[in-house]
Image (tube, rainbow, N blue to C red; front, side, top):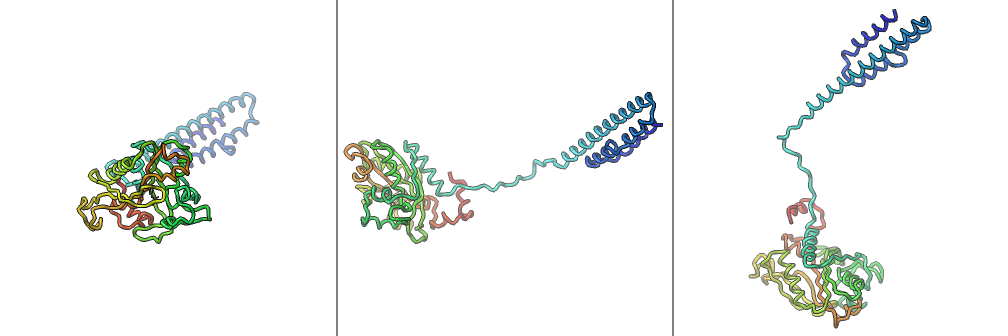
Length: 345
Ligand code: PHE
């Protein structure tokens, strides 16, 4: 009788599994047949009524039945998984002829692009890059640059003071001072890119925060001709190889002689046009031979070491290069403006 019962369980299972086609259902069935309240538990309950011989046979049969059912569940599980995988593969078929989704790409900010171009150029000429803090001491930003307190030339740069000794640097020239002190009288060539701040009213050509790219070369027998060469290279690299530069006398307290540097106008080729206001030249930077006082104050002997310095307005040359007419565009973060410079190399 028990034998029949066990055969019946196996048979019922076969019928019960035939329409199961997902793993959750299968799990339910497994609990039903092999769980604590399943038919085999009931069959076991009959054990106590058996003779020793009968117990042995019943035990074996129950075990066989259990193994049989486990095998069935395993098989069914594999079948369901295979079917699911097939269905998934069918659904996920990739049509390689469909157009791809465009990734939203960022772009390099035009000012940063200019700085990277300038860095590449000067590194290729053997300069290293130096940086300094945007919050500076009055000493580094002015005094050690030959601008003692009360000097009228301090009015050239209307400065944001934090207290009498600390300020937001109004120029990158204090990085010159920092590097000279660090190098202790030795020759070097550096460029220093960075942000500077001035109390200016923002308009199309002024911004209270802008960028400078400073250069300083110190060594024996450095002359104004070296400065001219370093800047001519810059003009030709940043604009085009037909550009020329000219030096006009100017004044900066930290350089002597000081010059204002113009680049020949790229629109009219130097003949004169509205962009260069008819002169054929466009002013791009200030420069000069490092003032002996500046050298001495930071531990250099002007009889042995001379040098030149220059300070490029990064916005100014970027505006000239890409024909941008309002400096505020750089700081509005309008992607319609910024994404135009994607291809710029
Ligand atoms: N620091 C000057 C300025 O901000 C520019 C400059 C730098 C001039 C180096 C001469 C030498 O106007």
